[in-house]
Image (cartoon, rainbow, N blue to C red):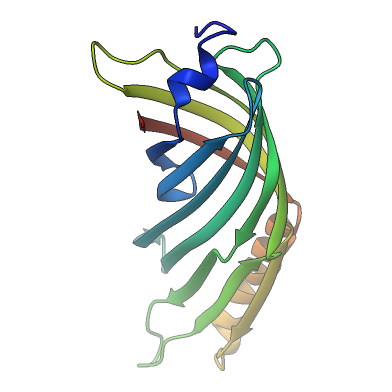
Length: 195
């Protein structure tokens, strides 16, 4: 761990952190205020498209993760361990389409979108390693949680009685389960460069 006398010096004028996290691929800039406090600005992005089939039902899930953050870092023991608190602008969206196999040449479908509260408070802890070798690169690890209530908007195009009830049960089940998740875990691993 970095000593109290060297923490601010090691951070220099700041550091850039390239990271992979549960918010996607990101980049973060941290600027030191003093030996125990710094402020970080970050941005994350990731696009995913997943197709799953279970029984007679096909699930297509598209995730568009976009976020930005402003986070204060407090080093209580003036070393590399840090407490983090701040806010995320959470523009993450997940679209969902559920399709039953054809019946009389017609598909029954359910579609919609899951979005989140835009401004979400965040708390966490983190640790930055000492510089690797003779250069200014180091590894960073953070774990925390963001409070971001979920908004669910689902609509169906079901016209076949034999399939409608099953789809609407899935719709209700998905809506009920998602609304129970107000906390989103954020785990990140990054490579930092101090300058």
